[in-house]
Image (tube, rainbow, N blue to C red; front, top):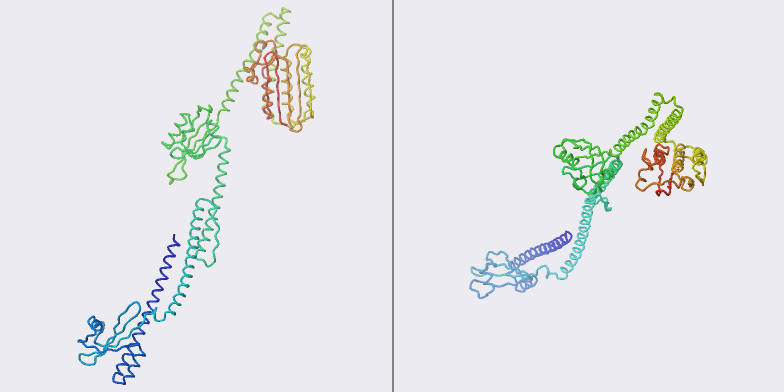
Length: 552
């Protein structure tokens, strides 16, 4: 649009200059013609008394006409010019002009009422020398077209450069890549283009720096083990991390939205609302309801970047206490279970000891019977303490660099159970494939194999069967342990609880079968510490199958 306007102005200006040149030339020609007429008329006046032929020659040579005029003349044309004062009696040169020429008049008084009127008709500039004028006009027209064209092209280029600079400035503001520009050293836009390029470089460096800081900040917040949520003054969520989503049990949107969309617990919402309104910080332990059902330590803090900063923000920090609460509950349950389990043999030992002291020792039958019970309960008490110590050692053992011979471990476990295996006539089949020597925690591998094999034998039927298969997969570098028995089996409702400490599946045999209820808990802890997994497949009164996979 600007280029078209500039083109129209240039054409108008070129036409205007042309007209001015023509006008000035025509005025110059007019002056020349007037002077020539004046000189010729004076010459004629001087020769008025000369020979007629001389005057005639002078008139013809200068293209003049002469007429005598008086006020009573019947020459209508001269009368009209006289009346209109185009011809003046004082000898002044006057003229009339038309598009094609000019007529000059000069009156010389001869007598009192008689005048000699000199008249000369001259052509205007454009028809005075028509070919010369046309040639100059064509030349001017060509030059004007060339100049206007150059001005138009220069204007278009200038408009393009201005538009490109403007677009680049917008791109810098938007953070986009600018379009390269090539300018001459003497171009008036060169400083501006260089300034834009320098500005782009500075802004790009700052954008990269800010982007790096933003990535670091998001990475830091994203990897924090606590839930973080940043709110503006209106309570809209600006920033959050994945931990906050996990704690709230809610998929939090990355777009700005009210915090109430994510936080469903009234007490936490109330803390945030009070912080937004009263500009106070709050700290409280809460139980989150809804999808998460977690215990958290909640901090709601009002923050501002400076005293002059009118825009304040609120940061919500949630520390997940669920595991701690669960561990505390497990510790309480463990202490209660240990107390109960210890109380039974201690009460038996104490009771039968008092009975012996009170006189039962004098009866040989009672003495043997009570001492046998005391010995059994003391062994049970020792086993219980030993299992508790082993469980504690597994939790503390982080060394996985022992060289272990799987065959030796299996043989030791078989030897320790040989008497029970013989008494119950159990068929025990073992198979070890792959490399027998592995690197892991010897104590944990021993506990896994020993406890699984012990349970499979103790809870098996008479003339039962136990298959123990150990495979060291050297390609995947994993240890696979499978043990299957034909024992009492486990009901569906009990499978999820068999790894709890002190939990026993067969309540009816709890008095007949020796055990502490910690064996499978020891196995589960050992497998977990070795980053493995364990699965159970069992059918009541048919048998049980354990599968364990441990990465080495």
